[in-house]
Image (tube, rainbow, N blue to C red; front, top):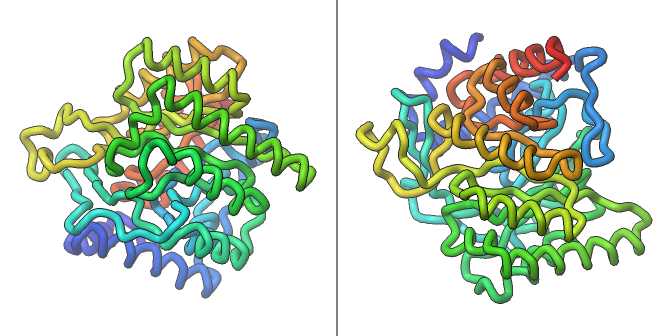
Length: 340
């Protein structure tokens, strides 16, 4: 059945309930062999962070927080899957309701707050999955860990997921964990990345494998902040930057139902802002570090815009809520046809 026919039924449900129903349905269909894993297009591979991606379209973190649906999601044709954000200890996140659709703007506001079952549970789930493609694992800090001890949370998670991850993403940009975005400030980021990279070196020596690390940043940064972050990413040997997370701005939704809810805004209204950050990062970094573009990709054309702005790969999330699996195929086709 076409997603366009199912969407009104899903949108009649509470957004968080619909999210769970959709993922469980995908897993059930996958167990029945429906759909079969989508074939990867020929001549569409991209080498980024020293990894070979079968196509440049990935799933952004946040949809599968606990790595419970990796195999089902991989069957949709993604070139890579990113799970999490995961924290050292399980935590419930913020009180419900915490997820809101803004249908008129093809947008979502969420204030989930890193709800997850903890890194040990995620590791168990990854070990059980049959997926053998590129897997990113997105890590964060617990809500009650003071910023002064945040690095210990990231190092703990890195140590746990390192043997299983194709790459690890350091999430310092969610607006839904109090003060988390302060980790983007130069002094705090310098210390955090130094600690993460030192642990990565130790793990690489012990395991004989260097796992790339990406850093996910916010769209609500000015040019000076972007320049400072880019310098620190390069100095601490990071392997990529993901641009961007959700925004606290309310451009295009402020007067719409749910548009004034607190949290991070994603979807179509974020597209221009996120693409501008991609463009600025690409200009500052040049060939030193690849950019992964995410934010407001609702069509193949939107994905192509991120690549044209300087991204090497793209990721989807909110667009899937409005477009369903067809969006994955459309973006892969658009980027592979264009050689993007």
